Image (cartoon, rainbow, N blue to C red; front, side):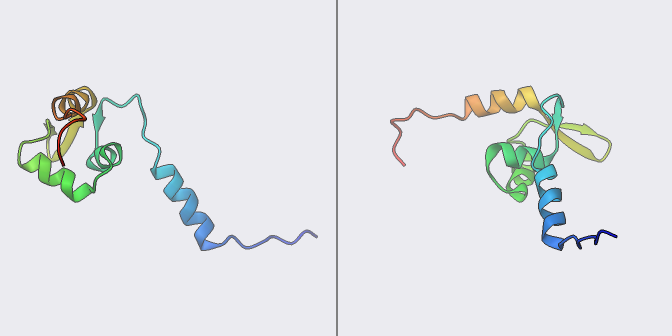
Length: 86
């Protein structure tokens, strides 16, 4: 009888993390975590930008989402010339 190999906890976590890193490109409204991944910033910073009114949001009851097209426009409007001093 073949012996079943135990599944390591890190393998399960890795698979779950890999699944979480996929962003559905067909979704029009993005969650804070998806916005954070796309912008390369933390989720807390995204919530700060949302609450300050800096990111465009749609409120549906208690849920807050960022429209994909509005995020793209926001990125375009906040893109600086490459010659700008840091």
